[in-house]
Length: 92
Image 1 (spheres, rainbow, N blue to C red):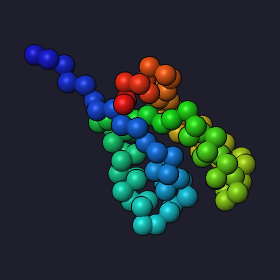
Image 2: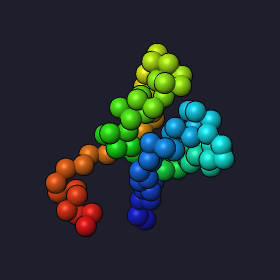
Image 3: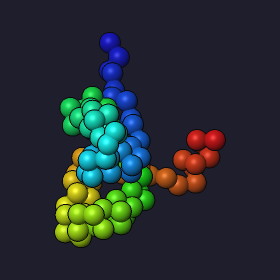
Image 4: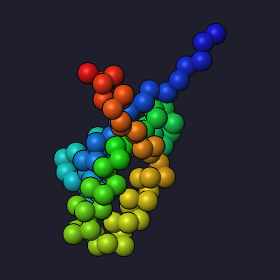
């Protein structure tokens, strides 16, 4: 019997911002998607640009210390998707 692997899902930074900043009306759907990663039903990925983007946006709202904590949380839950020339060409 073939092994079933979890679907790989790339999460846009806005999904995490919806959760971390409790942005309505998207927060509930974003939390549901995040929960799928926590439950290991999907493999969650973020782009390499997401951590600095999250920090930049959140530090103005929640402060630098909390923004760094939330970025660290994202990095502990999600894998960082590698994007290089072969990956970009394969995506075309």
